[in-house]
Structure formats: structure tokens, C-alpha cells
Length: 122
Image (tube, rainbow, N blue to C red; front, top):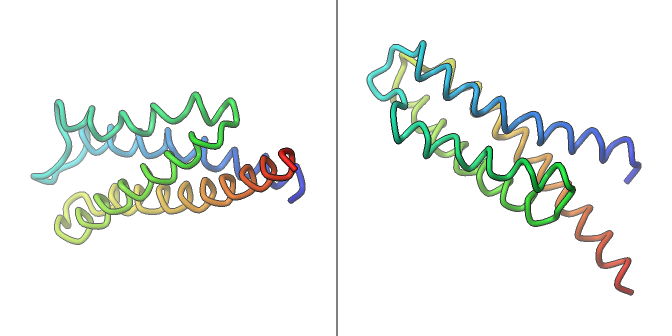
């Protein structure tokens, strides 16, 4: 895969994580639904996205795998909340889009990094 495409994928996944965090923070402050995240639950929701960022900046394979796993977690929660709570549906649909984009980019990035590491060991 061309280096330009790898930079684009890395930029997508690194941008998706803060956008997910901002969506949850926005929902906490401006959401009108009963199930909006507050307090400790808000920290539990945004912490995984922030924990994977330093490793992704360094280009570590494990960080991209964990980011893909965290994005599946966000996809599951946001899809469930968008389905069940019509008040904050826009926030949740934004999180669905960001997490799906981040998952696909992290997954492809992880595959590429793993193939590169296998080539170097041969």
C-alpha cells in the first residue's frame, strides 16, 4: 500500500477518536435525552479513545488493534442508544459514523502493519 494511503488511514483513525470523545462530551452538555452520559459514566466512555492515541501516534500495531476494538464498543453503544433514545439520536449517529470510520481505518492499518512486520522478519 502506498505511503500516502497509509498516512490517510492513520489520520482517519487518529481523528476519529477525538471526534468520538467530543460527541460524548457534547451529548453530556447539550443532550436532552434521559440517558445522556454524566459523571463517571462519561469518563468510562471517553477514556478508551484517549488511551489508544499515544500508541497510534507512534505507529504501534497493538494500539491500532485496541483502537479497532474500542471503536466496536462505541459502535455497539451508540447504535443501541440511537435506536432507543430519539432525543439524542443525532449525537449517537455521529458517534456511529466516527466509530465505523475509525474501526475500518484501524483494521486496515493493523493489517498493513502486520504484513510489514512479517516481511521484515523473513
